[in-house]
Picture 1 (cartoon, rainbow, N blue to C red):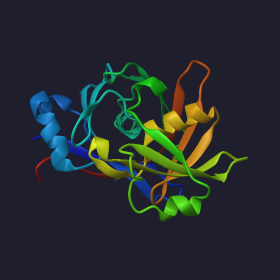
Picture 2: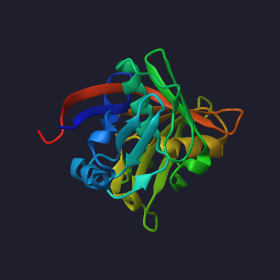
Picture 3: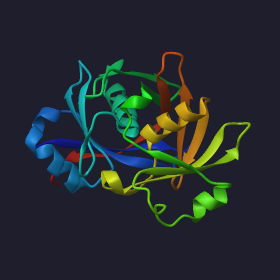
Picture 4: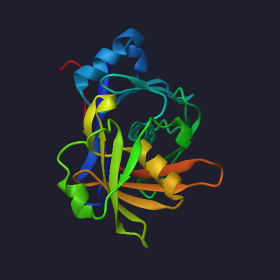
Amino acid sequence: MPVLHVLRVFTGDDGAGGNPLGVFLDGASVPPEQRQAVAADLGFSETVFVDDSAAGRVAIFTPTVELGFAGHPLVGTAWLLAAEGREASVLRPSAGEVPTRQEGGLSFIAGRPAWAPRFEHHKLESPAEVDALDAPLEGYDAVGCWAWEDEGGGLVRCRVFCPAYGIDEDEATGAHAVLLAAALRRPLVIHQGEGSTILARPLDDGFVEIGGRVALVVRRDYGD
């Protein structure tokens, strides 16, 4: 029976928040033709199937589509592999080679903005306006609504709505953080959702690094 690890990725310093993630370290235990249905059944914003931990080959699914690159799934998978004694310096989703590192209890990955799923950015005037949103803005099906908490300090308040990917509101969206840091061209500390924190910074080689804290929720046989 496939073994499922459920994680929370991008938790705050107090352990709150974090985006739920399902990871099957033995991806071969779930045949490729069944993976979309499994991801839909779990209902997480993403589920990862590790096909070869030594080579770093992974596949990422939302409840409705397969993604070539996604932030919190890769951050969480990198952390889990390291925690299991199988640390990979590079993960290989279909988009390309994604460098990873672990430092100070945080897990980091780096990706190119061009790999990220499509998101628009909508800047609001204050964090209170971001907090007051109760639905995606009309006319947007994948959008990050954000405002400065402290522009000088690079602190951002953000919420991401992405019904285009089968997710009404995402708790913590690494791919959007990659795009926002690339657009603003500066390091950011992003406070997203109900309590999640994402660190993001552009690198010199066209990559953007994102990272944060990860927590294991449960390890169980899938189907229990």
